[in-house]
Every structure is written in C-alpha cells, then in structure tokens.
Image (tube, rainbow, N blue to C red):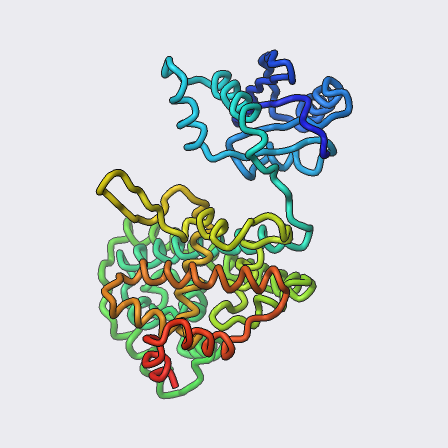
Length: 416
C-alpha cells in the first residue's frame, strides 16, 4: 500500500449507474459506466486491479458513506478519497466552459485526485466496535427525530377533535398514559361511555393509582364537552390517531433496543471508559463522542484539525482592513451537532463548563456562540484524553484553569 497508485479514478455516483473516469500514470484517460449492482461493482474493481498490475488504485467520489462506499471499503489495494461536493464545485470553476454533467464531473474528480494525491489522505475505516457504535448512535438519533415528528402529528390531530386527551394526558411525562388511552379509545364519544373499571385499570397500568386523582380524571372525561360531533371528521381522525399511536409505541420500543445494544457495545469498547465518566455526556452522548474521534489515533493532526473539520472552529476572512469571523457552514452536520449538544449538556453538570459559559455570556456572547466556544475547549480536552488514554480529571483541570484564567475564579466560586 506504500506504492504510488497506478490508476486515478473519479466516480460520479447515482442511484442506478455510476460514471467513472480513469487516468493512468502516463496521463491517459478513458470513461466507463458501471451499473449499480454488487456483481457489476465487484467485476469492475477486479478489472481495475488487473489493469493496475498489482499496484493500488485511488478512487475519489463525492460522499463518505452510502452503498457505493460500503461496496468499495475493505478491498485490498483500493484507496478511497471522499471529497466535499463544494470542493469539487470550486475545482470545476477553475476550468473554462461552465457545463456540467455526470461524465464531466467524474473526469474532474479523477483530475483533482491525480493532481493533489500527495496532499490528500485516504479514508481509513474505524475498527468494528467503533463502526457499530457509530451506526447504532446515528440510527437512534434518526428514530428520536422521527418520533418527535410523529408526536407533533399526533398532537395536531388530537387538537382537531379530541382536546380533552391533551388536556389530561398531554404532558411529555404522560406520553405512555396517553398512548395507553388511545390504544383503547381513539373516539372521544367512546371514552365518555367507557366503563369506569376499565378506565381505572388503564390508569393503574400506567402508575396512576391514587383513587382521588382517578376520580378527577374520569369525572373530567365524562363532563368534557365534545369539540365537534361531526362523524365525517371524527372517523378519519380517529383512524389516523390509531396509526400514529401505534407507530410511536413501536418507535419507543425500538429506541430502547438500540440503547441497550449501544450500552452493551460501549462496555466492550477499549476506549469506552474514557467517555462514559465525563460529566454531561451520559448514555446517549458518550458513544457519539467516542465515534467522533474514532479508533485511528493518527487520523487527526491535532485538536484544532478536528475542530475545523467538525465545524466548531470559526472561519476567519481577511482582506486589507476587512476582517470577518463567522461560524463554519461547510461541515458534517451530525458531527457538529454531537459536539454542540455535548457542550450544552456539560455546562449544566460540569463546574468549569458552567462557569466558563457564564463568563462568556457576561462578556456579551450569544448562547450558541458561547456553546461553540465551550465545545472547542472540550475538543482540546477530549483529544488529549483520547491520545493519552488517561481519563479526564475535572478537579485537576479546574486548578489549572484558575492559573491560566484568573477571571473565571469568581464564577467557579458560585458553583460551590
């Protein structure tokens, strides 16, 4: 793998087929088209390796994940170079013409790879446990976002015809009880006529066992006036609510299964203990932080490299007397979200984070800017922890922080 690549290949991927452009060491190039199927991709890779004569082939494409990347990973003598689409767009603008199509994009990818191969670093997959944690954590996050949308749809639907359900069981802490009620009665007229013993049983199943409270709930259900008695509205709305409630229950169950698997994998990971004990990380953010750093210790040159890549470090633009500093937009959104959410959580549980946040806010910094500033400090700390494999000592760091930044000491005293 230390040999220079024999072929430089650019791939403009699509759903049904992929356009490829291949450049050899002599600068000769040719276009190819691959259909998107495991057999076609495998045959094409074998053909390219045969043309390379046992030397590596380098492939550049506009994504870091997806079916094509997964099909090309872990192949001997295949080097992958994912590139940001904006970077390719800027490169294409350096050539006259202005036209754009898939074969041309593949050609520019191959050219950029052959010209800049010495300045680029091939993608290196993490170990199995880290990849598993990364996929589990990301899928869990997607399920949570999906559940939030389902709950918003359920709330909107209940407002149309069943407001008493939201009045009595609409709090976040009562979601299980709301779903339990809706699993039996999606029609408010049926709930009003329901047997008291059956309603009490449902309330008992969801930890509402106080007799007086049960009576208040049942009396309110019986006395509540219907928002509408229009059968044309109630019937389809009730059917939609039944579907939404079922989807939310299934989503909640699947999230629990994901969390159990994440916890199990985290215990087996050799770096798991470095992140689980950090204040503010918790069971959800600790695995995401671990995966943000990965298992390849030489992936990042320093902490600032990771901060820039993740979008936490700001962008500075200078020209003459003009100087602008703004947040970074071109970055992996999920990675940036991970550090931002952790820093926001840590300021509630970690004394120095809470003090630093208060200091930044008193200086006039807005909330999100202050959280990004905290996140950048945490990246430096966690990078050191990750490199040395020595767990973070909060008390020791606070003593060092007092020496470097004396103005934070009054804010630290307030936390005691």
